[in-house]
Image (cartoon, rainbow, N blue to C red; front, top):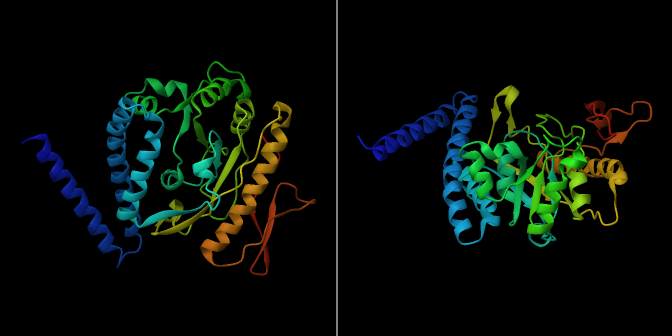
Length: 312
């Protein structure tokens, strides 16, 4: 039996399994979690394979800087079809199209943020990755072919030094980058942000480019892994005004990090209110409890995040 035949049998069986779990979810709601997880996984595999060929082709014609954009868009449409999930991006001033180069940053909630990138990723932009990933077969090849900006942390003592090489790449290639300053997924049920790491801010200042925050509403009503929740739906996402870094130095990083985080948190809460169609008050930092956000909700005060606003 040929490879093509095996592939056809696999895809047919996989599709049948996904459809079966979707049908079962009408009786057993938790089955929807399995159905969408399977659908998302095969969608990711398909886009990864497409990405390798797309990157090779675009590099041959000298357009490798749009490779990650092309793969991101493919993932957006495939996921909308297979899972019924999409991120609705609000960008009235078209910053995604006109601001270049820049350091784009966003909140990091779950693995579904890959789809958020698929929906908003601008052209001439790439993710950042550790330099040692270059040597990993397939993944490293795709990253290299598609113009990933690599950061060499192994030979650097701090975030500022680690970003020096990446800053030169951004300037030389006029290549924007996208980073998650939280550094890891929060898996938060309520709108919140983990403490920010400073790398993205050092990078923007060293490269002399603006920071463009992109925030997505808390979507625990769409995906909440702890409770096996995985629903279809649209998630509001907003591109905020660029924050200039011209004239700033390393001494300004702490304040830039703090003020940007506060701005993003306020916008996340506003977008979450829109997504849930229920009031969520703007957070107030209590002098008595400086490490907690106390948010009035439904007549009670509920602490939704215990994270120090001081940068780390």
